Image (cartoon, rainbow, N blue to C red; front, side):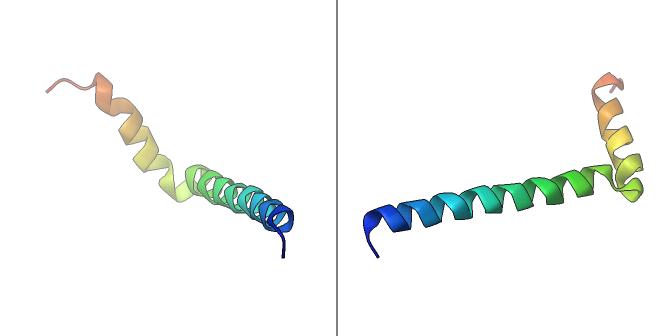
Length: 49
């Protein structure tokens, strides 16, 4: 394997890895069971101490 092949494979792996990670985070954020947690977190800055 030469340098160009390794560079191309690592670039492809990086794109696939970050696409999969983005999809996982998106599914987690939009999962209906997590709505209550995110709504509570969104209101935290507005609550008085």
